[in-house]
Image (cartoon, rainbow, N blue to C red):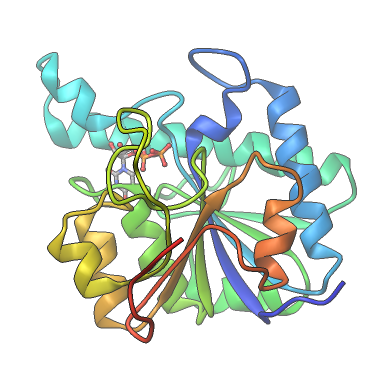
Length: 244
Ligand code: UDP
C-alpha cells in the first residue's frame, strides 16, 4: 500500500462523528473514523485534519434564533475543539500519535496553531488535528481546511462527506443526477455547485489546490483516495469537467 501523496489535508465534517445520533458525539463513530485514519497513516502519508463542528453547533443556525452571528460562530468554533479532542483521544487509544492545535487559544486542551510547529509535527509522523477553523467568524471549517492546506503545503484537500462525490443536481431529489468524475473550478463556481462554501472554493481555485470529494463511509474509500484510485470527484484548475 503506497500513498499517491506525501502530505494531505483531510476535512472531516462534524456529522462524521454523529453515528446514529442526531446531535453530539458517538464514540463508536469516532473510533471507526480513527481506524480509517490509522490505515492511511500506515501508507506513510503525512496527515493534517480540519475537523468541523456541525454535529454540535453552527453559528449561522444560531443567528436565526437571535444570537449574534459572531458569538454563534465562536460557539461553533468551540464545538470543533470538542470534536478535535474526541478524535485525538480515539487516535491515541489505537496507538496513533497526534497533536491537537487550535486557532483559538486554549492552552489547557490544545496547542495554539503555529504553522511551523504543525509542519514539524507532520514531519515527525504525527497526525495534526486542527480545531477552531480559521479562528474567525463568518466562515466555516471548509475555509479553514483550504487555508491550512495551503499554509501546510498539502498536495490535496480531501473533503470526506456522506455522498460519493459532486453531482450536477441534488441526487436525493433527482433520480437522473449525474456524478462528476472531474470538475474544473470555473465550472463548479459558475454552476454554483455545492461542494464547499464559496470562500473555501475561491481560495482553493486561486491557489491551485486540488480538492477530492468522496464518501467517507463507504469501505476503504479513504485509503483508496490516498492511493489515488479513481473514486468520487476531483476538482482542479487542470482538469476538464467530465461526467461519470
Ligand atoms: N466556524 C467559524 N469560523 C471558522 C470555522 C468554523 O466561525 O473558521 C464556526 C461556524 O459557526 C461553523 C461552526 O463553527 O458553522 C462549525 O463548523 P462547520 O459548520 O464548518 O462544521 P461542519 O459542517 O464541517 O461540521
